[in-house]
Length: 544
Ligand code: F6P
Image (cartoon, rainbow, N blue to C red; front, side, top):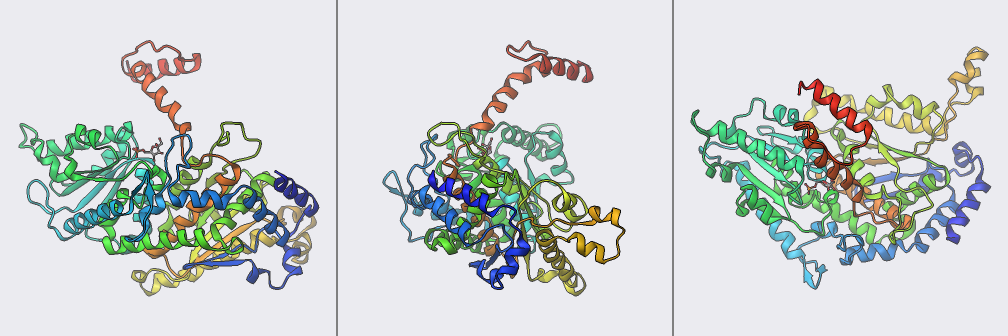
């Protein structure tokens, strides 16, 4: 595209652009390069861009018709081209009176009907109205799911712990490694345990395997010692979240205990559908609706804000800039909040499963970089582990620093006082990454000349700082929607289908094919020499 070429020329002209110089040249840069969306303040002044860069990036977005595709998504057009599906996670948080049609049918009433059923159920579990098979109150909720059916609720439960019931326990099982379920069940009383089996397709082998084992554990535990309990116990202890009623019934869960969603909700975009039930039980229906309102607020911002002030558009384009013109390979997300300890793992699926593509929407190989590797853990832990590479390594790694002004109320005065130290670290890192420390500054401290190169910080590492007053349910919703739409913008510019995930299929098929070789020593056609030898060694090690 000419707009891409224009950016390439601009990049050449910018040459070794320095953040120090950009700030020196514009006293108002921090103020001008900031945007407010809902409760989130975004400072993008520490990026290697000037007004011309931003204008050229917006022109690229216009040429790629990001706004057109965005409107098509919100309208319910089938923009997931390879699966011929609408992409309507935004409908999951639309107000009751909204009208959004898929194949001529308004989907909003169905969304709210399920939300209402979830709210009823969550309220019953929370107040003890819903009891287990023996009449005992539910004390523990175990969500069994993987990918989008796990990461969202698990992340949000951690994020919103201060809003969650402290007298109930919430556990999340995803890995087909039996150790995951084993540890999750440790110490549990089956009579007080509710299993939520979360799977859009209800065919995901990890989830169905774990759910089957959980069912057997429950029936054994509720039995009389000689015989397991009969299947009627399942109805009080298992609910399903799925789009697939027949498979739910086949598994043995009454579809009366199923909370549905729809094929126009992608797995990694499903957390505010029925998939959020465990979180809703934890924080209560009202707080859950505040979370949805937070999502909706950013949806509306993305849909209506002008390009210059459109936060997801800006973040998306900045990523396109670094991937396309600085050869940046990865993007770090560094939350300065213990509660966001699972946030980056959640974003990994959102971003990498969406934009880890190498053909365009028409199936032609792309000639540009697509989605980056997304990684990161909460500060300040990362500072004492891998930040060395961020500061003095050879790679360009743009990063997001996310922080909150207020610690949660329940910390108490002493722990709350630590919050300033936490946030001082966030601000210090943003500054150090951007401006570094010159050799002259190091020398001025009297450092011996041979040490100077080792103690010099080049700086010029771009960051976005996201700051909000506190991590409330609404703010969490706003943050997630911000990233969802950022990923959307990038997919649109790169002209890829951000809503399919064919890349996960091959491994699934091969695992099914290889398993009999492990268990029975079966000869499996098509195994390569390396894998055949590894399987043989595995079997020997297992004494088979
Ligand atoms: O294998 C990838 C994937 O399909 C993800 O996209 C999805 O979130 C996950 O598996 C779980 O799928 P399901 O909810 O159908 O069990």
